[in-house]
Image (cartoon, rainbow, N blue to C red; front, side):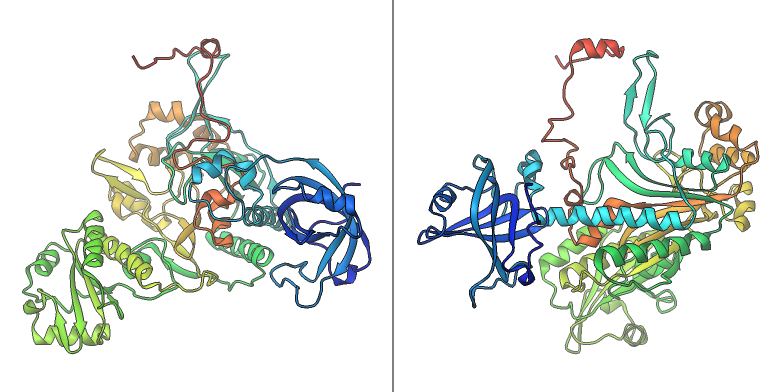
Length: 588
């Protein structure tokens, strides 16, 4: 028997008991011949004492131990001497006095220390099997495990069947770029790694499964970002004869149980609900962070007669004038103003107008264009006080909202308005636009995916070609400014789905080639259905409080999508390529 207890299990109640522990040497300290070793395993650490006067040979062997040696010890649990308790350890009131030591494996010198932060993430990922020994990463993986277990138990209780869907699928345009896999048996044909189980789960509904879920691995050939990766995991679910309200209640109940299990907190339900229009109008983004205020304020009425050309031009062109009041931010530096201005320009604005309020003075080149009536109305509407910084957006509604939305988040970051990372603010966003026009491609694209159902009352707009006004039966669930899940009620009629494909520029022949399986299925009595997918990686990232999504994945790729530990992607022999009917075109 290698162990009787793990390294975070022993307490004062175990004093006098003989135990066996196994793990890694976390640290070794020599106190005048008495050796103290912190022994570590997945669960935590226990202090082990080697005393020469009690076991000379064992103490001598302990002198040779180095960090990360793998050992087994047998000894007796003792209470620590008064004044030497370690409150940072759960086992801090006891120690194990060793009577035997068995070195199971020696460790070479590590490429980086495990007890301090390592700035070089690529080095950590190249030796991920060492990095995983950090208790912080173990904690993240435990949270991920708890999330998966709670999800399965909860959905099982609610009548959902866990069904696995294929990873090798067909390449179809659903939004993200796909990874292609060549077929050896069928030359010049390719599978696509599934970017989501979307079509399969809808076909499960046609098949009468009624309630499906899966903790699914998805693959998207996208440029990695801080919260986006090429291999992602999602809690995927779909149900027949279901409405939006049913999905909302189901997901709120699931998240409530997940947070109770992983964080020991009871989140408040029901969540706040906003339409897409309300979210953009008030916060400038469709995934608002509700942990702080600083909402966007509409000033169209106030400046309806403005002589300021920038405001006048925006209003005359059917646009808006909006602003935010950054309370206490009049101390803004020139560098910070430049940063905010550049951010505004990146978001589509021509610049950034602002007013600094210092004492009774409003400092801004634009104030001279305001009448006294406008200034007084602005002061009252925004509750302007000494120390405030008012930032304006004057453009089309979409641009003005987006610009101030990004400015709002940046100001909140600078002012550190979010002081408690465990302040959980959930909300639902409903009624997204069904379609968005892409001027570069001169075509309409689906805001979510092409299987999302238009709102019933907006179907005439779809028929009449007023695509920009059509709303979707779509919904996102947001936590602290991060979208953690999205879904919709789906199209289940063959003619409506064909119409949707047509609007997206997919003609009848292409529809048959790309989506013939789905359209045919819808002719055999497809039930009304809908669902949602929750991002496991993002959700665990928020639960554990890390800002790096790779810290919640056992073996992630780096920021360039490269697996430094396995050296993947890698070259393969020419023979293997020939079997796949691929000609390797090497650079000259």
